[in-house]
Length: 614
Ligand code: M6R
Image 1 (tube, rainbow, N blue to C red):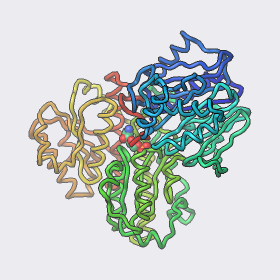
Image 2 (tube, helix red, strand yellow; image 1 turned 90 degrees about the vertical axis):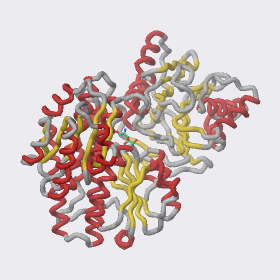
Image 3 (cartoon, rainbow, N blue to C red; image 1 turned 180 degrees about the vertical axis):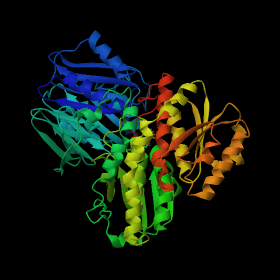
């Protein structure tokens, strides 16, 4: 939700900033802008629409050579996506340029105060007031660093700010509270950005910033202090993936590339978690065994796709550990006054590690003295930093707005957590845990099998470009798969799609069914005889009303075959693991249909990858 970048060094700042913004465009793409310090002073270009519009503007109205500047790609909160509301914003005299990610909650009172003092605003944004506040302090004699420190003391809400001052040409200053910011450490050049992908081309050495910290950066130095001016503890780290991970590598969309990366991502997420004695090890769980044994309730909290992963996790964790599990949408969690105690384990799931709703849920849970374990894909992000422990999914950077490998690796992390708890609490014998681990280890090859033959799925998409509405049905773990299949279609194709528990259809939604409605149904493995047969009966109900049924069932399920207008076969796996395979054709279907409909698959309208506002 907004990507911001700052650069200082000896390179071409415009090139560095624009290439960085391109890699962060997934964070917001309704407008973008750049401010560079050149021989002519501060030169600013900003444009509504995608980054390509800014590039065109820079071509028609070039700026001078520069080695120092800031840039921004926006997802609008305050003020529509116009040229004027695009960042960077300037102070009244044009001395300070500033970019912002987040929301300034007390902006109305600050704006009124500045207006009373005679400030004239050029935009409707909350961000512009920060540029004015910083510049006012500078004009009163502060350095950029001092002005930033005083200003953040007046702000409420979540923000990452990056600013430059024409009179301090060798310095970039940034501040961070509850929104992402990382420092890229180069040789004779340094970077600041919302996401390491933006500078991975230049350096793989980074510094993780903590909450309420300020960075002052020159080409050769990086100084991090806390908002109160004290020296901050910094955590340098090495980024263990390279530029190719952040590029499309020959695919038309990041989403399609990421769909095909899933077998590797799942294998990487499993790697290192099983020791030579074939026991499950989760070293990152820094919660002692006694505490884990005392847990009497688990609450999984997440948003969107991660929430769907949590719903599947519930089935597995409850089944293996017999601990009751609730699953909650993060934005609802703290407002219902949930019952949490020190023996509650809160498990949050977030690909980005920056989702504000999930972060607020963590803070609420920890205030109630619950232990929090995060499942997260982004090293050094805010959510793992604020949790008691983290299980990293090793999916590599996920850039397509529609989550794919994020989802399947979150499922693996939920399974690992469930099995680990079962191992620690003794609710499963060692050989039972081992048998399940072996099934998990077999998944990447079975995922490859599905992805190697998507012919049925892809031709289905070709046949369905004129459809306007879809249903997705499933029971047990097939139900969250149905929800996730529907979400994928909605977010990138803008088509109406709904996921239902198959057994619930007859309680209302069946009224939607007619011969025009395509329905995807996830059929559980035949081993779950009762469940399997119940789903077949549900298919019968919709077929009786003329619906076209696209049935996902395991290979050799000849009974299910008879209920299918179109059959998509899946390799045989235990029921609890079937979602890892069943979601693959649904992701591929959405990606293909959206492509055929001419939609922007990686940057769907109104969405942003990382949702850093509540
Ligand atoms: O980064 P997170 O996993 O916390 O993000 C949660 C949701 O915003 C995210 O899964 C969203 O629903 C995706 N666009 C779904 O494809």
